[in-house]
Length: 239
Image (cartoon, rainbow, N blue to C red):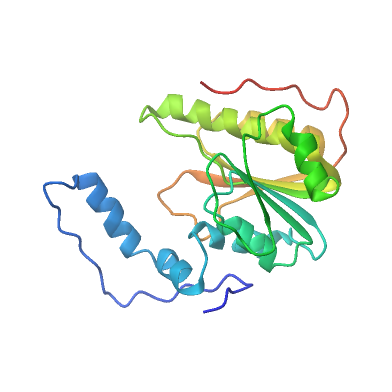
């Protein structure tokens, strides 16, 4: 089935619930995760429509609301694996799409795939050269590996998002936009403050595809003011 260019409305539940029997080799937590996946309409729809992850619907919904991916724009997708957001950027008409991740990504027609670390000091120049100029849109659906300790995980999440902001400031063209995942917990205010210094408009949204029990939000910053030496300070990488 071909990829859909517009986020579909999810079909109403018919009351059919897939139950997963726990085996000795499967923990209760993993059984719950598998059951949630099997009963998630976005997971089912992603598989049916050819998206690599349910996260594709989040970007489709954000783009429907904020009109981020215009024909002819250059898009940089950070932490892109497995490639759902990259697929959306290609399908929505971006002229150049570059996907970067530490992990390998299977080829996506219409996109350039690179494996590497966006915190590498040489990466901004490499990526803008590959794009043929500054990016018009930087996407980040990244989240760090979690430890299970809530306060530690929140600090790591915020630090990663801040580094993504700093990177975006280095590669965006004036007037460009930035979208990133953050998590509610109090510390996200510093990210919003940093964005407000560098973008004319900063909003946040929780797309319908984002699970209700998740604290994730997406910040959408538009109207990049252009880089200056004082626009941002490099941030330390979380341990």
